[in-house]
Image (cartoon, rainbow, N blue to C red):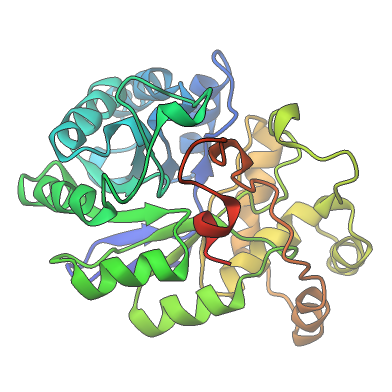
Length: 317
């Protein structure tokens, strides 16, 4: 398994298990089976609503001797209603309690979007707080304090544009050590990849398989299905692997961390085996032609009338 080494010597397994959309009753078994297969990187978030179940799986795995805490990399994310500096620590404490852990390996600001305290998803613009009133640098300062306190070893962001990320890189005491964003052949984001490589900020690819199991409200009627793309299928057929393995191998080839979600033992095993797949130069060239800047998670749910958020200023495009 490829790993990403940080300045302090910590190593992040570059292929992990995503847990977004893993339903209650499924995620416990999914984490247990993943750990038994050899996964050592689990990606979580408060808003996924399943961290307590993941915590039960982790606690049992530790007790059963399947894995030791120090051999795992656990990531979670601060939800948008905890952006006020006074609320950041409590957001992490809730996650640590649910996961039954003393610390996280990586804690991310989930979105560059602030919500009023107690609001999980906005129903109107009145539920959102502008970044002018609650700057990301203020939230970041409270994230830095979590590292000082030993509650998380690394901090980063998720869904940040180059503009927002560079503001932290230029002004923060502790530089972000991750930006987790949607990345796949239909959304390759080469400018972001180049910027992060130049700045030494790693990238994690979420929805690497196209997220076709995401909620219906986030889908478009005519959206393309990445796993059925003819070029991806042709490469999979040539290598005698699955289309999902092609997509995971492509993400790893680019030097990005990748977190495919699965609650199925066989697919988890296939996904993990993708770490050993080598794509040819011709494969990479064929995939490069698929970019259509197509977001499956486009952030429309933040662009509420009456708020300061628009798709244009969310992605700065």
